[in-house]
Amino acid sequence: MIASVHSLPDVITFVVASALMMVGAVSVIVAKNPVHSALSLIMTFFGVAIAFVEMDAQFLAAVEIIVYAGAIVVLFLFVIMFLGVDRDDVVGEPLVGQRSLAVLGVGVTVAGVITMMAHAGWVTGVSALSNRGHSLGGGYSNVNDLGTAIFTTYIYAFEATAALLIIAVVGAVVLARSDRPRENDEEIA
Amino acid sequence: MTIPASWFLIVAAVLFGIGAFGLLTRRSALIMFMCVELMLNAVNLTFVTFARSLQDIGGQAAVFFILVVAAAEVTVGLGIVVAVFRRRHSVSVDELSELKG
Image 1 (cartoon, each protein chain N blue to C red):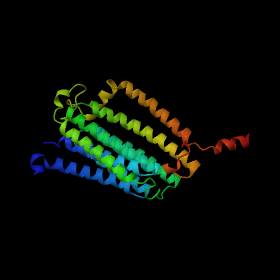
Image 2 (image 1 turned 60 degrees about the vertical axis):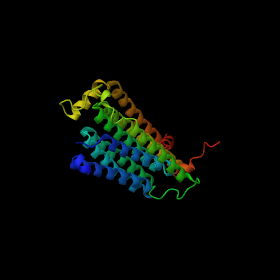
Image 3 (image 1 turned 90 degrees about the vertical axis):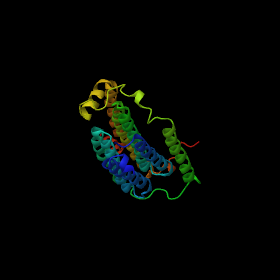
Image 4 (image 1 turned 180 degrees about the vertical axis):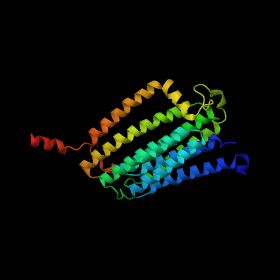
């Protein structure tokens, strides 16, 4: 029924991507072992990357895999193994009713967002807003479009990210640095 | 005919909800960071969906910047986790109550 309206490969791609995202996301929050959570996170990222390819965002799909699945999850795994926190955190509910309240709040939020999308015409009434910025797929590749937009319209934001990354690296080094080498230096001096 | 944008928006909303639920219920700071990543990815998916339906590359540019900010956030956040673990030998956020009045 659905496949008669939409092309079957697109539907299959969507279902596979969504299944990867949902299964991965649920097992991130269910898994007892943080390493399993991190590996499930990779699964979710692959699902998101498939969805990006489906929506003609090929560059972002590649970056999603390289940066998220490649760098960020490896950073998580490094910290997990560095700290040796492969055991379970607190079992049960220290705060009474926290889980049911969380289900309630999240359910209301998600249902509200979906209802809003269904009734506000965001999805159907978008054509009036289109083509204000750089258009998508104007005869060039996705990388070409995205590169042109980032290096012209968003050039100041792009330069600011350079500063942000430097600050983040310096901050991480300062935060994670051990105090022991300094004591050794004083002893030597 | 391609997949309608609303399908991806609903998936993104559910993904955001799963991430928010994990952030609210899990105690380990590491898992909470992973849930933040889940929520960021849901937002990324929404941005790309609207970039397609509006035919505007700006949505994809926003995802690019979110990626950079997420990388910076994880770097500093995990640095804080390592620093906290050195002092407390635990990454459970329940035990970080030193500022409680």
